[in-house]
Image 1: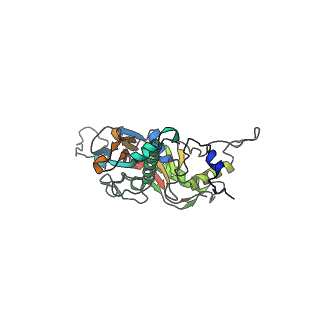
Image 2 (image 1 turned 120 degrees about the vertical axis):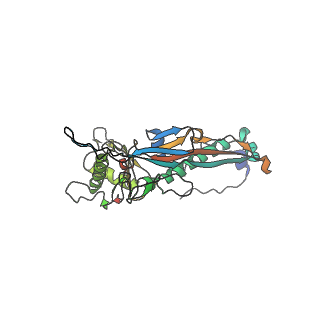
Image 3 (image 1 turned 60 degrees about the horizontal axis):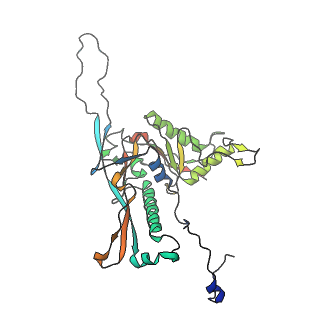
Amino acid sequence: MAQTLSEVADTHWAAVGRTIDDEVIDNIFEKYATVDAFRTDALQITDSGGRGFEVHIETGTNTQAGSFDKYDPLNKDPVNPVESAFYNKRYYYCPIILSDTEYWENSGPEKRFDELRFLGENSMKSLIKTINEDFYSAQTGKNMLGFQDIIADAASSTLGGISASTTASWDNNRYTTSKTFLTQTTTNIFDGFVAWNALLDAIHIDGGRPKKLFTTWSVVRAYRTAVSGEGYARTDLANAKGVGGKMAPSFYDMDVVPDNDCTALHCYMVDPDGLKLRVMKQVNFKKTPFVPLQSNGQLAQLAYVVAGVQLVCSARRYQGVATAVTGS
């Protein structure tokens, strides 16, 4: 059974202290892979100011192109192939607060770890957690746009003020047929690959070149099982190291990114040429200066970690979603 704490404050208890680890070990947060992917790869742009984003998109062709000969009269009707999409800037915060008495007590040889610094780290991870969750949500209130808004399950949704029902090219690709990844409807071909390939081809036909595939751990586990079972992953018997390769192997040109926040059954293919995380330089996951709360009649210090972020899409058809892929 687990050790329980039952102590008597006797002589030995008073005479002997504990061996104390200086580090606080995280037992609550996850690795927020989607925020990390957007912040570390070609999926982020840092901006300086402005009250929003305006994106100009080409949505029409000039249908007058054709052949002619000699003195044929030529068409000359004006065309308007450009529309503008607009996005609001969004801001996130998380407070860091510590009373002066707690700050004073967290000093000298009695200090086990830097409480104020740790509270700042905890708030930053809490902020990232919230933003990562919002990547997979539909926009509400003052939150940023999510994949459900931009890479929508259903056709004809509106984004940036442009309706896909009237501008057909302003719609994402989708694959909605239900598939169980490890089922083989066709011999030796996993149904999960059928769904992924169909969606990938549709995006490529529209000009997209997705580089990231965000999905659930369940789907990635099925994917890993498929490539392991079919001998795609390396098995090193000479050194008895077992199955080698990446935890989430790439799928063609795409990095496969499992995320626990991803909507169940969903697989999102993202082309960075058409979808960016726009981050404001002044609030690029930064901490504000600490200020005293004495004006409120409190002896305490307060700061915030802040981030100004928004998902901005300039090529919706370069993105795609498979909405009903069952993993394992």
